[in-house]
Image 1 (tube, helix red, strand yellow):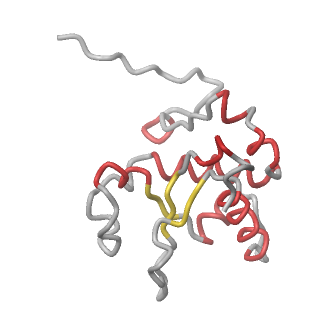
Image 2 (cartoon, helix red, strand yellow):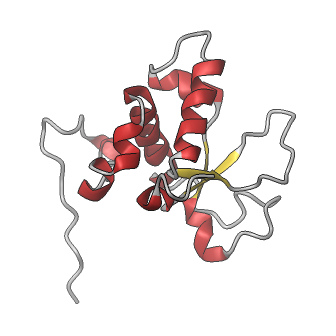
Length: 145
């Protein structure tokens, strides 16, 4: 049986190690889409950080979001959280990050890159908002929320 050989990053792409092999895939059609071009540079980078967090495997457990029972099993891998602490860790935001971070998230939603996965669930007490990756950007601006 032949397995698919995993590609190794070039030395200029990664510092190596286990975490060094996590990468973010941004396809040509997304990068050159009208929706992506319309985003601010900071919102574009925020999307890349969200993809890195969302796809690195920490959200793959079927029980990671037990309070969102209506999400289909096949869609659970699209779910992720991204908190204010995550935003600060990116270096995109300073201590007064709340307003620009919210604006960038709202822009990603309005341009169709992410959706609120649980709009009817009030999250509080330190619980992070749950998002879902979306393909609505392909039809932006004709299908903006």
